[in-house]
Each structure stands twice: as structure tokens, then as C-alpha cells.
Length: 301
Image 1: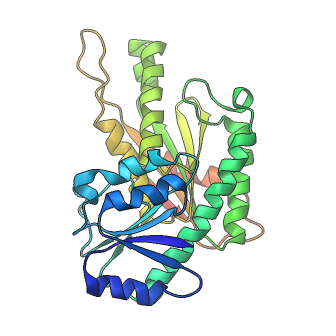
Image 2: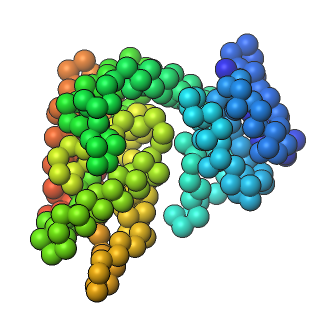
Image 3: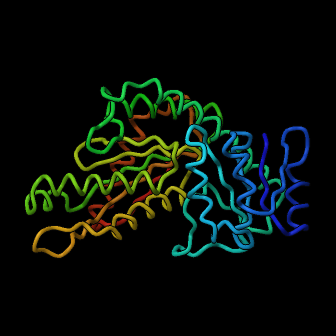
């Protein structure tokens, strides 16, 4: 696999080359984000390792632009950082973060997982192209309907099992949706659903499987993600909706609250079923609502 490495510190670059060098990987050192563009646009490389602290990724907004350079291909971005990032400054658009100093074995494991996810994303993209959009996609949100989601998520579960990857199912539901519909009408409720669906897409990875389960309830499949990392995805979605102004005539902007339930599996067995994981995530979401809503409840399966 060809890996772009944006690291201007010679010592750090040497550590990465020592950990990943060999016949399996071809490392391409670069000194700026723009140098990555030709490789990504041509599809020559789909994997970037970059130093978030010292590179120009932040100032150039490169991660956001990289996704649009070659929409047909999955771009995986692994950031290295000297410390744990605060929630308020967490970069958007990355797929994984590893804290320096890291062990060679840890970096190898992250790269191996990235390679599997890139492969899974390619399989998912092919499968999506084969689906009939009119038959399987919800027209309001452009997400898969329940039947299509069940079929697609079952394939995602099986691919993760074969690749020995963890997986998480995330159920999301608007806490006060009935009140919004009853007070302001269905058109306003539809607008809220469209805002939520747009936020889910923006705050999740391009290749994540997403479905509209029923009404104001959505379900996501996060391959290669477990526990606290799945919680971060849900937190980003909740924060994104909270920060969006939804105007209504002669009233203050709507305050939309969301609850999330997560079911995470570290090891997928042959008996693990997608319907069970969906129900576990929905039950976890119900527990978040029972606890007052506007929060996340996580369970390990």
C-alpha cells in the first residue's frame, strides 16, 4: 500500500519509516498538504499519515478538501499528535488519531486496520452502486430505508467478522420530535429531520452505512470503531445539531435534543446477528432517553 507521510521532523519521519518500511508498504514523504493532492486525485494513494501539530493541515483545511478530490475513492487520514486533543479543537475529517510517542507495533496495528477499512469501503461503494436508489433510499433524508439498511449492514457485519475488525451500531432519536410536529407542523418536523440527516452525514465517515429506521430514528454502522471512539462520533452529531439554528415564524429558534444508544462488539462471532445489534443499540438509546435525554448510553456486546 502506498502511504503518504506528512512529517517534517526528521526523527519522527525516521520512526515511521522504521515501523512501516518494507515490502508491504511504500512510503511517500511529503512536506506540505498540497503535495498530497496529485496522489489523491489520481488514486495513486488513499492513505495519509500526518502530524497535526506541525503540518499545514489545519491552516489549509486540507482534510475537508481531500474528500472532494476523488469522490470515487476512500481517503483514510491518520493523524499523529503530541497530546490528547480537547473536544473543542478535535479536527474534523480525520479517520484516526495516534498520540506520540507511539510504539512501532501500535502504528502497524493502526495501519493494518486502516487497510482493512479501505478495502471494506471499496466493497461497500460497489454494493451501493448496485442498489436501486428509487427502491431503497428514503426521499426526505437520502439515507437507506429499513430493508436496505438491514441488507447492507448484514454485509458490513460479515466483512468485519472476516477481517477481525470491531464494529459499533449507533441508534439516534430526537427527544422532542413529537412536540415539534404537534406545535409547528409536519413541514417544520421534516426540516428538522433534514438537518439531522445532513449532520449525521457530515460528522460520520463517507463510507459509513446509515439508515432511517423509522420516523425520527436513525441507525449507523461504524466498522472498525468501538467504545469511546463510537461515543465521539455520536457526540459530534449531537453537538452539530445543537449548534444548528432552525428558525420558525414568531418563535425563538428550535432547541433540538437527541439521544444516542451504542452497541459495540470487539469480537464478532459466527452467531452474531445484525438484528440483535440493532435492537441492542435501540435499547441503549431508550435508556439514554429514560435518563433524561440529550445524552449517550453505551453497551458492550
